[in-house]
Each structure stands twice: as C-alpha cells, then as structure tokens.
Length: 258
Image (cartoon, rainbow, N blue to C red; front, side, top):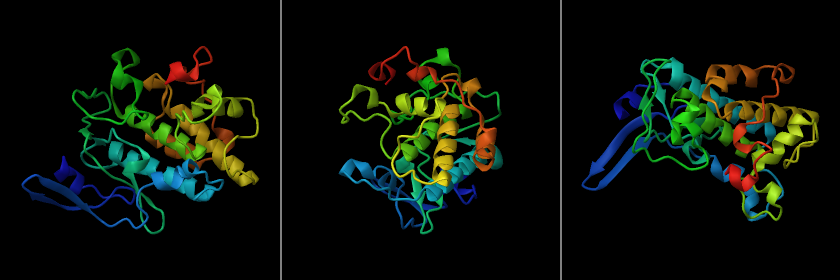
C-alpha cells in the first residue's frame, strides 16, 4: 500500500518521500507541514476561547480541498484507494493552509464501484466511523464510508467543537449534529461561533448541508465525493436540505444516538 501511496500525486494528498526502519522504530517521511494538523485550529473552544482560529473562507477552502483529495483517491489515481480514517488529526496544513490528507494506515484498495471492502481487524477512530462498518444491516463498506467520516469532520469544523461534547450543561447540546440540524431545517440563525456576515452564514449553511448529506445512515443516500465537490463549489440555493440523519432522529436522545 505504501508504494502505491508513493505514486499518488495531488495537491490535497501528502507527498510520500520515503520511510525509516531500524529494529522496532518505523516512520514514514512526508513533506514538512508548517501548520501541523487541522485539529489544533478547530477545537479552540476547548480552552475557553471565544474566537475562531481560522476565518470562515479558510475553513471552506479546507473542506473543499479535503473533498477534492478524497475524490482523487476514489476516482482519480490509477489504483483507487479508500482512506477509512478521515479525521482532523489526519489533515495536515501547509504554510498556506492548503489541506493534505495523510496517514493511510487503515487504507484499502478499491477495485471498482461495486466493491464491498472488508474491515476485519482495522483500527479506526470512534466518532468518524460509518454505521455500515459496525453492522452490515446498513449496507456494505465502500467509498461511501469515507464520505461519512468526511461529513463528521466538516460538522466539527463548523461547530468549532467535537461532535460529542459531554462538558456542556444541557443534555440537548451534548451531541452537536442533533440540534444544529434543527437550526438548518427551520431556517434559524445558526448557533455556531463567529458567524456574523451574510457570506459567513452562507458558507456555514452550505458546509452543514453537505455534511448532513454525508452522514446519512444508508450509504446509498450519501453522495459520492465528486457530487460533494460540486455541491461545495455551486450555489447554496441548489443544495437541498437532506432528510434528518437516522442516527440522531427525533425519536432518540443524544445519549442513545452516540
């Protein structure tokens, strides 16, 4: 897999330079990313901060870049690859905050669009794992599973917080996607940090709509990454409100949904 990753070439994928191996020490070598990983820029509220580290336009460009990188992995490179561990810690930022998808440890080859991938023994990150990875009742594991992880990541970018936050005082606010969907569906002012201008409201709303499409419980209801890119690049008016994702339907409490 690492040799195949070394042959990928895309602005939103880290450049694999080589590896280091000595006894029990192993390391992959990539280009230096001066701004580190995305998580330190989107979870700033955990230290009590009341301002965002990144402007909304920058957040949007990062979300779009990650989507383009996944689109390339799924459709653009010679050997199609499924990442299976999309999360803030695995998105590196260069000096211009251009996102680079990294850490292909759990990645799998994807032979064709009908391929169903086995994830037996894979070590994935809780909070970003698609439901079909846990239960085949939701469908087969495929490129749509990366889309789910991407949707959960974008929700955290918009919220400036982890999707599940047990530190808040109100039970209804523990699970961010549970209540932010209501704001979008009812056309309310978004309860997210740092939205002031109309442009920022439009960016935040578009990112939320895209993320809700990505985290639909049924993989067949999730758009492919090529469609996600189109939605992000297009007009907000052309992005429909998706059904409320089943995993946090009104019939469940936030605790049950998690």
